[in-house]
Length: 204
Ligand code: TZP
Ligand code: MG
Image (cartoon, rainbow, N blue to C red):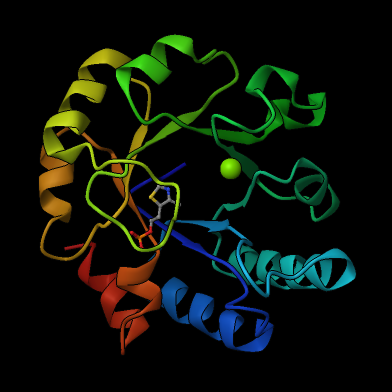
């Protein structure tokens, strides 16, 4: 598991073909992890979601990159994902089917208070944020800043930690300096004119 550059994306409001193209370009740019996060208006469901997820899985496998599914344990199992990412309001890591024992389990933890309430057995990495304000998640909560990130690093010890929320080429180094093992990004990659170049720019 290499958390350095964790790209998160969905089917772009139902346009699966365009989305696959974005994901391929990001993989070309050197993304080290990928998470399928299918949310919001136009999100795919049922058979079309399953087909899309399978296509993404094939694509990430081609590049040897872990394919993580957000929230949806059934979907993760159906497409034989490499892992799942869950939030505080989702299924608890300890309640996941045994199938996930051999898989990567990520958990969102936004604050030291949430950390104190989280059962980290079975958890392989933590996602912390939003570090900076973000347009990509309505209920992301207040930004914790790099000071909040540093505090989380102190509290979690050696647990792998990826920073998320509002991360750009201008601020990602501050996240790494604050103790993150890597950065998780949606818009600074998916919204870039040159997706491959944008991804690559985070690896310098
Ligand atoms: N969780 C916390 S912030 C966020 C998620 C999924 C959105 C990150 O997106 P962006 O565009 O990189 O700010
Ligand atoms: Mg969730």
